[in-house]
Length: 403
Image (tube, rainbow, N blue to C red; front, top):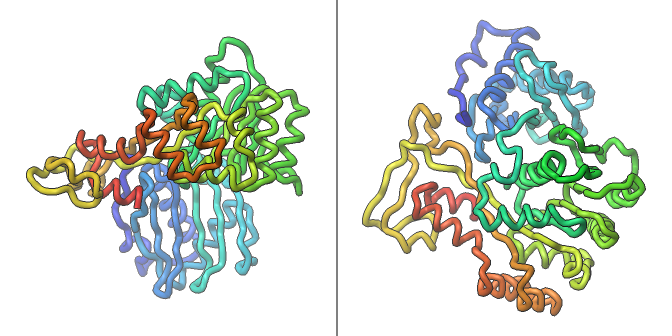
């Protein structure tokens, strides 16, 4: 279940509770509650009145409780101890990992980062699950056309599969599903290497390299070095700069299959940003075999209410329908009105000559997007509208995701 646990302000600020044992017990309880609720992140947010404890569930933050100001430094110090960080250094950012099992009853590895703020140190805990529900592409919930493109692309011996979207949109989950498909279901054994920062899940049969452990080597340097390791498939966690982009696309040009993620709002924007990083359009034409953009939207719980005869609020295109569903909230969904998430996606029709002509002529992203839609691309917005009309999600959730 992905439900936020109940508030426990009264317990964490009980006057009868004090001392180091209480801080240890409190930290364990918060982290255990989060792990059992499949929370992705726990925020310890300092303020003038204390430190807010917040859980991120299905991409949305929920306030869980507030710890009094006098105890705030203690709980951050305890988190730093778990991650083997320096507790006496409170004026510099730090980051570390907590191995699975170090906190009782939590079989998940965690990453803890801390940073100084105006009201004290802020800490964020990220959970890395050992297992995921989405092992392979056919389990991700993509439409048939997107799934077909992805599966067709990973069967090639070379080329670039570019997965774009904002932070928290499920890009890494998609990439890992493709890697498992290659490792477990390929007709022949393939040499697969990943470059990640950090490694989020251990994948059998794949050589995973954590970039942060490689000293002063940049990601671009690491890509060049990995070419000497005889890879057939290379996964680069994220393209962030020109050096990384050039090294990655050079690897694809030399006969390697490259899977990578990229921060961009749409497939057209992803192409435009790569051009801005210095990747020539003819290189993109020669290497990219699939480029998708994706989002995750929350799925309405069964308790949702159906509204009839009113214009949909929250998303302008939803006004084409006068029937839609809105969140209500119940015990099952923890009062949020939503349970789980659904992917939205779009894919650039690279096989179309007009689309490729727009790319090669360096036309702006608007022209590229319009050409793609004319030639069969189903946009993120169109798929979002379909979800509203089918009652899978609400107009307000679409507005939250798209802004």
